[in-house]
Length: 367
Ligand SMILES: [Zn+2]
Ligand SMILES: [Zn+2]
Image (cartoon, rainbow, N blue to C red; front, top):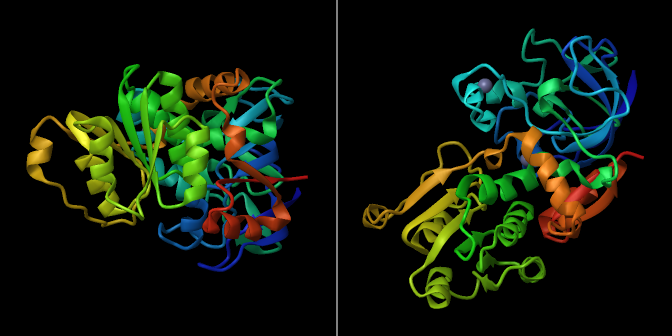
C-alpha cells in the first residue's frame, strides 16, 4: 500500500517526506496501524545522525499512536478499531524478558534498531526498487500507517485523546517510569531532576504523583524551568548561573534522597551523584554516545549512595501505559503541557524548534 512517511536519508540532513510502499502482507504476529500522530524523541534524531548504526535510509518514529486497521492470524490482543499506543519491542524469551524486565531485553538492539523484521530480516518498506528500512522500534511511525507487533502495541481507552498519547510509548514512559517504577520515592522524600526536557518534565510530574515534597528541577533554559514549576517542581535551579550541587545542599540541608540524570553529560552525572544525601540513589537515563566515561568520587559511593541505569523507565508497557493514561484523564499527569503539534510535512520545523527549546515534545499529526 502507498503511504506518506518521513525518511532519514543522510546524517545531519533534513528529513524528506515522500510517498513509499508499505508491505501489505502482514505476518501472523503483526498488526497494521493507521497512525494518528507520533511524538518526536531525541533518539529519532541521533539515529538519523548515526550515533547508533541504524541502516539508512530509514523511516524513524517510535512514539506512534493510532487505530488498529488489520491484524495477523495469531493476534488476540487487539482487534480492528482498537486505539493503541506503539512502544519499544522486545523478544519475550531472553532472561530479562522472562523476568518481566523487557527494557533490558538481550535482543533490544535487533528488535528496535535493525531496520528489518527481527525474525527473517525481511524489509517492510520500499520506494520503487529502493529498499527503505522500516521496523524502527518495530513501528517506523513517522508515516500514516505502520506495521507493529503484538508485543509493542498497547491498547488504550477510547475516551482519551489519541493524538497526544504516542509519547507515553517512549519519552514520557522513560521519565515517569524512572520515578514511579525504578526509584519509587516515598511520599515526603526529595528528588532533583537534571534536565527539564520531555523526559525530565515527565519525571517531575511523576514525582508530584508519588508525593515527593521537595522536587528540584535543574536546567539552563529559563523557559523549561518555568514549565517545571508549573508542573509541580518546588524549586528550580539555573545551572548556568551557579553550582547546582551547592544550591541543592542549601535547599535540602544534606542533599536529596533521589536524583535523575537525563542530559547524557558526564559533568551533569557527577552533579547528580554529588547532590545526594547518604544512601541516596541516582537514576541514569540520559543516553550518551557509546564509550562515554564519567568520573565519580569513590568515597561518595561508599556511603551508601548508588547509581543505576534505567531503560524505558523499567516499564512493562501493557501495565504502565494505561496507568499513565488514567492519571492524565484524571488531570494528575498533564502531558499535554509538554506538547506542540506539527503536520508531518513540517517535520524539519519540529526538529528545529526542539533544538532551539521552543518545543519540548513535538507531535507530528498525520492528517
Ligand atoms: Zn528479551
Ligand atoms: Zn525515545
